[in-house]
Amino acid sequence: MTTQLWCLLAGVILPYVWAGLSVPFRTKQFVGPDLKEPRVQAELLTEGGARVWGAQANAWEALAVFGVANLMATMAGVDPVGNWSMAAIVWVAVRFTHGVFYVMDVAPLRILSFALGSGMSGWIVTMAITQ
Image 1 (cartoon, rainbow, N blue to C red):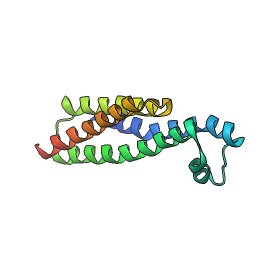
Image 2: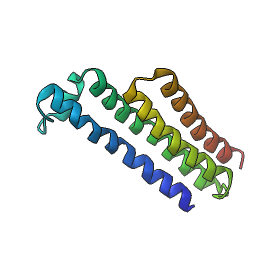
Image 3: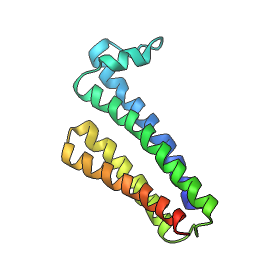
């Protein structure tokens, strides 16, 4: 199950990547990040900054679903080699591209990435249920 653990780790890191990428937008709009009230400041971000913050929030949400899907697969005894590993790898790839497309404001590709990532989590859940 090494592949799944690496994919979960990548999923945990992604929201922090998007948070880090918000710093240049915060600096441009507010002269720098507000270390006392970063969430309040994030809600005031506009344009690219707002999209980076949205990508971060969505990354946390997707990670929760992916984490539960992997837990279900583990508990059901799904073979970690093969389709489960492939679904996990695809999930990481499309979740990364989701954030990129979100920041770049390419809505159709962002939505496609979101759908594919959700589909991979759903596929893992299906593997667990049908085990």
